[in-house]
Image 1 (tube, rainbow, N blue to C red):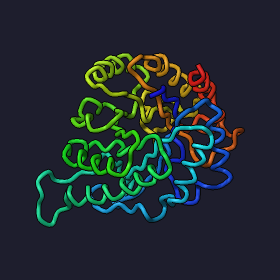
Image 2 (cartoon, rainbow, N blue to C red):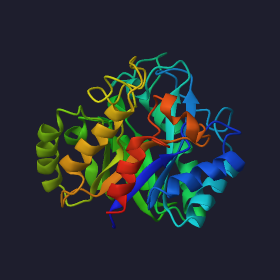
Image 3 (cartoon, rainbow, N blue to C red):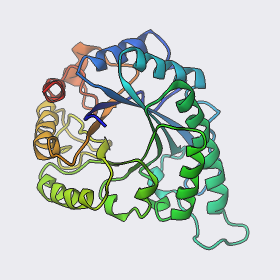
Amino acid sequence: MDYINGMTWGWVGTRGTWANEAADFSMAEMAKLGVNWTAIALSALQDHPQATEIHYKDEPTVTDAEVVWAIEKAHGLGLNVCLKPVVNCANGVWRAHINFFDVDVPCEPKWSDWFASYTEFILHYARIAQETGCEMFCVGCEMVQTDRREREWRELIRQVRTIYTGVITYNCDKYQETNITWWDAVDVISSSGYYPIDAWDERVATLEAFAAGHDKPFFFMEAGCPSREGSAMLPNDWGLEGALNLEEQDAYYRVMFDAIGQKPWFLGFMLWDWPAQLYAKGAANSNDDYCMYGKPAAKTIEAFYRR
């Protein structure tokens, strides 16, 4: 595979925000940064971490027509596409805490019920990925408590392969790369690289040793930093309170690119993130979120991607 100069687009995939003029503009502006890949990311909801039904056909999840529109728009811009369906909890608890008893107990929710619903959800989007020619498909994202369910993940991936013939990956969470026991089941290993700005040397050494033990490409399916004070030390904390600081975001990208961006065993980034509905470019100086549109970090990213 070629190096992934990527960007995540469209999160969280709220119905009505894709397949319109603003979304068209957003993706075209993203492409100007020199990206060659985009992860088209959408969320479906289950009620809470112990719920066993995923409501992927319901609002607020984008419609299938919106998903197809986004894929075709990206392909029209010459971008490779990774379709990334993600489950979230409607009560706001992070998906990493989805969890059930390892031994079934009567009258309690069960892994088998959850994986049945999750498999239906993932296979639905695997069909769309196949029909639209997506170059990559991501079967899960940051589902830390589920990672230990090796048998279920292997079976899910086996079923995906009966439908989808492209590249398959799983996006593990930060610090979890060495904990997955079923990396051999996917084609490409990916993780969320939200590491503190002062921890890159240690993490690069750990990841280099990890990558050496797997005969597969490795890249960051997510990586980024909000533009606010304190975020460079806690880049994964989207709710961190801090004053606006565009320079801190830019510095984070510079350090990350220098630390890992050109390692021969590292395949690239799918940066986080680029919304379907952009703020006005003139408002960049007051935006403290992850999106880098109109901010100093955008020029840093473009320079790295066009190197």
